Length: 415
Ligand code: F0G
Image (cartoon, rainbow, N blue to C red; front, side):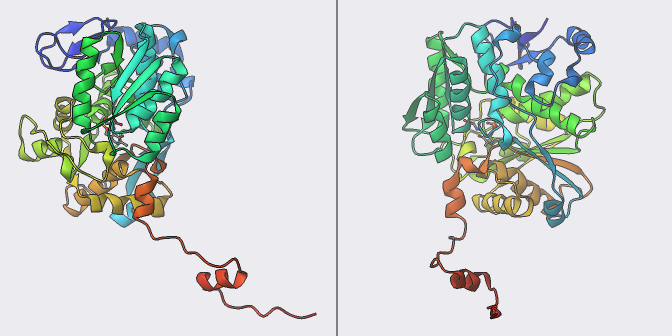
């Protein structure tokens, strides 16, 4: 039987019980599939005929009632071979998995389609999350689609404009908290324990992770079942790296792939408790009280899923790296200009981290590498405009345009 299981003490909980932390030891939970049953179902279901998307993997999702599925067509995002960027970095096999192509512009939609479906299955009438922006945009959209109430807590003045616009327009109750993401998360954790009618949809919720694991499945399939040597992903609250690793590991367990990638997490220098723990070989993280970075999506000091992330990195033989704001913004431009992929700053940290790892000879030039870019560039237009050259302004005359384009004057022939 598919169950929820504590990652520390192994205590198990039924799939339809609302429980966010283990009642015995307080650690976080994960979904354990019953592979005997899943294997049988997969053999008969014809899943390979369904187009690439989260719900192609419906048989691997812990959802009972298909009629309740809340979807906006998430997943099936592009895996782009990046030859020009690869050449610039000295790499031969570089790909970017561009999650900005999801319905609300980030990978969060993979988790929310499953999470909000689960909310309906459990009979929830309202959902809540704390967010640095993308989770709130995504939850607000899926709650609207499902017709249930939604409240989102965001750090006041610290979320990108596009994300704020999304959360508002989808009609959720948007609450700006005078504090940072970590404080907002503590509040929603307490609220959802206290008021059991409100269903919590932060990535602590293991059903969200189930949706996000499809990112790993898709990469396997897009590379003809030869996973990359290395997977590089930005890390904030640490749900996504854990989810992607779960996806790869499950495909491995099912015998669909023969190898696993080295999971490589990138954090912003001012918000890097996990990267620090990996670099120092520490068993625990030291939370950052006042995290700071231009990449507001990953401005997180006390990642709730840190243990899952550390396990994923260590078990896979991967690593973690930190990048400065300057490196992030440079990478954002480089990816836009060399590949036509406009991603938000947090997403560009995977490219910045890769560049640093190559420079430090920690990545081999022949490795097959996939960088995940987690959110669309239009989420944060202010940063892009602020850090780029101002557009030229000229009079509305052909000559003025010729001048700025450096075009020679052409003397027109007279008849
Ligand atoms: N990239 C983007 C664009 C994000 O929005 C996030 C997280 C991450 C990376 C990190 O993923 O938390 O699973 O390690 N954003 C959350 C939010 C925290 O509220 O939108 P993670």
